[in-house]
Amino acid sequence: MRAPRILRPFAGVVLCVVGFAIAWPPGTHFRKTTVIVDAGGCRLVTDVIDRGEDETQGSVLLFHGVAANKKIMSYIAQGFALQNLRVFVPDLPGHGRTPGPFTFERSAACADALAHQLLARGAIDEAHTIVAGHSMGGAIAVIVGSRMPVAGVVAISPAPMTAAHGIPAFMLPFENPPATPANTLAITGTFEPAGIRATAQDLARGAPGGSGKFVRVPRSSHVSVLFDTRVVRAAQEWSARLLHLPGGAGVPSFRPVVGWFVGFAGLLVLTGPFIRETVGPLLVLTAQKGDIGAIAQSEAAAGDVAPVIPILRGFAEVAACSVLAVVVLQFWNPMRFVHIFQGDYLCGFLLVLGAALLLLHHKEIAASLRVRIVTLLMAALAAIMLHLLVMGWFQLTITETWLIAARWLRSPAVLLAVLTFHLAGALLVGSAARRSAFRRLTVALLLRLLGWGAMVSAIFALHSGEILLVLLAVYIGAFCVLQRLGMQVVRKSTGSPLAAALFGAILLAGFVLVVFPIN
Image 1 (cartoon, one colour):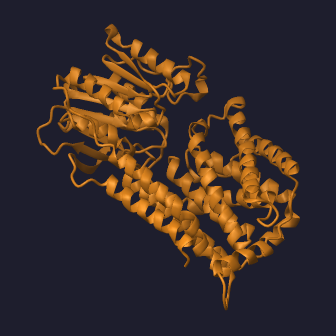
Image 2: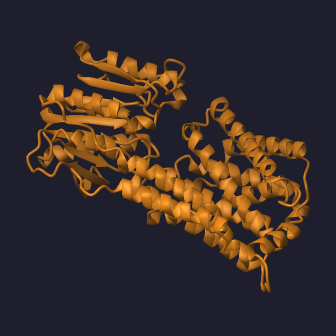
Image 3: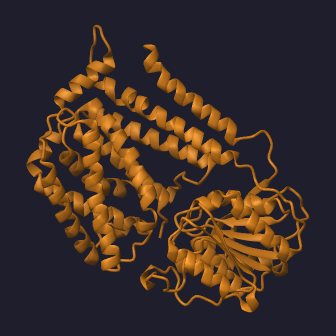
């Protein structure tokens, strides 16, 4: 192997090793115990985090947001633990390790049951307990705090609970919100939607006797607040005032977050060579001389004879079929049976959209299906291994992404649903031999953007309520870019639209199963 071909994998491995070294410093200031708390029929998998001392100065109940989990709350939890507080962080129903079903109402009920169960067991003392949360968890913290005489509430970027400041009622997660508890601190970032900032400010103003406080954190977004030292300090100052704690607790180390970024960059660098080495050489049965990878790619390009469909025609077809899909889903969702909260809507949309596009191009399907079984198997293997590697890295560093059995059982249905869309997309994008890589990437992303626009329009025009798809738009968009780049490597290496579609479908199915709650 020539030096230039070795350099990229070597750089990727170095980044992964460096990221691992950064994310795992030699010592730790915290003790973490994971328990299952059976409260009100909710078996909540809960992390208990403290400084390792049996005698603490109080307790914190910390709740995550929708499509999140207890692990992503670790930085905030450690900030409280540095004050010698014991922090209880559950996976709410349908999230992380806790089984479903998930609904907003059930999550709030389970959180309230957890608080009362801990109180009954003597694990917490109301007068020395802070209830905190982020996004949906911030709203839940307000609900729990209104039902127990706790010392105070910390609501970080709380989900709105009143239809105000341009936020319609159908987007609200909870009905009949309680009055703001006393001693409520509301924190938001300046990069959040204006409606969320305004409703958080109203929340703080509603605290009785002027006991609330509103903090706006500059240059922070809805997610970055979870890893912002200014948010940790504000929460520490609030708990110190209410629980009469000494100041100067310090903030947790930022090394795990930095290590995650470095290691993830290394995985991205390794992805291209990994895919090519997994699926490319299969196209060459024998090679007397020369570069096997180059021969494989040239034969793949020659064999990719998919027809070139005019771009404007493809856009028109996707637009029309997307409208058809949202109309169908308004009356019937064929994927409702998988019970994935709002992920079933996304899967149903892609299934109907893909099926409609394939019907329009039924004559071209046969050419796309001409591929060796071993090529499909290796494309599938590459996708599965890539999913496990990336999700494993996330699991080790920043957030829970390892699939539990309930999610794995849903994977065949989700995969088949999204595969139809990916195969139709592969036909519309065209062959690797007839369009440049940049043009194929641009066309593919624009086609997806058209479909996404139809879904978002349906959410607001038809009040379908699938608001989680809007909240996750940035992350789904970033995933689509990276996924499409990987699909193009598979397409160029194999010359098979079906292999590329299967590769992309496995990655998207994994993404849906990791991110969306189970209901």
